[in-house]
Image 1 (cartoon, rainbow, N blue to C red):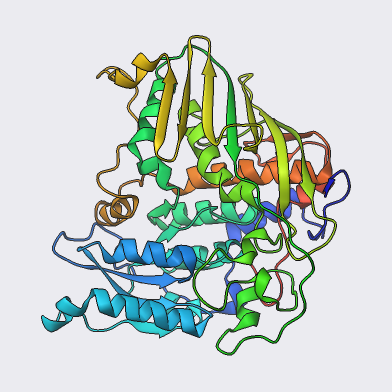
Image 2: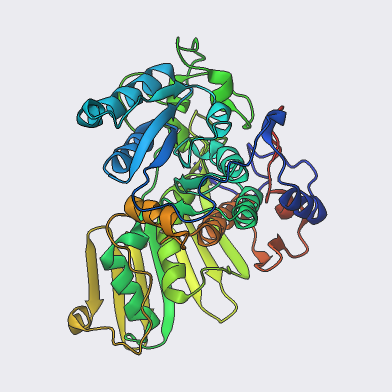
Length: 452
């Protein structure tokens, strides 16, 4: 392993100016010149007695979990599933049909159709919302195109692969009035909410620093080129990412739904910085009220493999400096406790999945008063919040601009580590100061015929 201090491996540095970035954001281009139409079915609030129709795009490890959560929503009905792996797509269809068996007897379920190209779902005028649960490099295009076609979107985190994609998605959702729920479900967990409220309301005094710790991915050796399995449209799976020959450990297991190799391949995923970081950095931003801004300086390092199929970072340590003088330290859980720790002049709050702790302990029994700051309170599950907001057209627990900012800060850490130098960032203009090489890494050229 080595710490990066050179030009980034695996990232194209094709010219991309800020003007190009803004032009792309305003243009909202469509992938592969596929035709779309505005449906308008849920442009206004959906009546309480009308079932919301949903399609799932991506039915792998996380996709099955999100699909199961949607199937539990009585006010919604899944009418289509899509995956480039025919076996997984059929599994998902059977999952839907099994859950809806009783409804079918009453004539309420009329079937679930399989698709292998998400654009066919986008073209359907009878679909109100989509779940985008694809690999990270495939998040942006389906979500953007769904929003442009009048559909609401639940999108797995990290929201997008590049900062440019996130800006385009957020702007598109705003322009077309779409409801977007980012899969940052910690926003719907009462422990995280209460921990953030303690911080927001000064219960631990002035915040002196924040520490965010995440797991670290292992590396692997080189893998042989393998025949593409029957039933997998590998060209579509690679999509807009740079082409690489097929090998199972860079894609997903042929049997079962174990953790896929694409999570550790930089062409498809940034790594744990965005995989877990987008969860925990989101909480850090939520507590500090940084939800629509970002750091002004980024400095740190990461270890990267010299060879092998898995090319994301290993251990890392990045410091973000914010305009108010606060530093957030972000790295592997060998140096920072898993989760988010807020250090204040009068105490400490630590929160992670399934646990909330504080010093002094009495804070855990305190009450946030009526005159204090109360953060968004989700009624029911994160998925239920999405369905509820489709009906009311209200803002979700994890809205798109917040998701973009939380994802951006994680990507900034990877860019700084790959370049091996301190970077200065303008969170309003979303560009680096006096660093053209870094600014080219805000975007990534897409493999033809895909474009933003």
